[in-house]
Amino acid sequence: MNYLTDLQKIIQSKKNEDPDQSYTAQLFFKGLQEIQKKFGEEAIELIIASASKNKTQTIYESADVLFHLLVLLTENNISIEEIVDELKKRSGVSGLEEKSNRKK
Picture 1 (cartoon, rainbow, N blue to C red):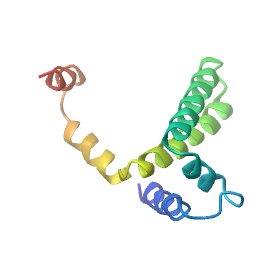
Picture 2: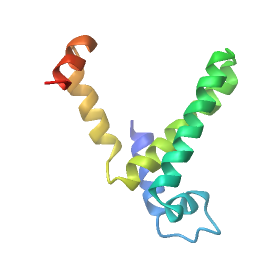
Picture 3: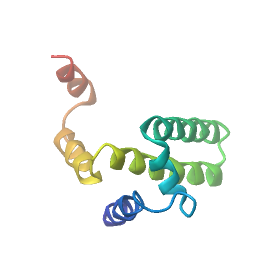
Picture 4: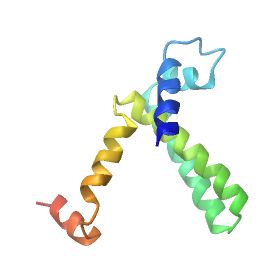
């Protein structure tokens, strides 16, 4: 968890850097829709890697998904800690029950 928190801080620090010098800064410069698009592309690549049962590629694409998720969260002013807190709230609750509670 600490690594993801630290990584999100690094990502946050890139928001105002020169987009010509930083891929992360480029994403922020292009805006939320581009960040969403890139996250979606990475998610699809992960699904394809997983379907092919290629462990190395699945790990690689999973890292890409996590990175782009952190960029997306950062753009939306959401910390990884907030996501972990939500997961902790759900701990010990049946997934079916949790989904049912969301609909109320």
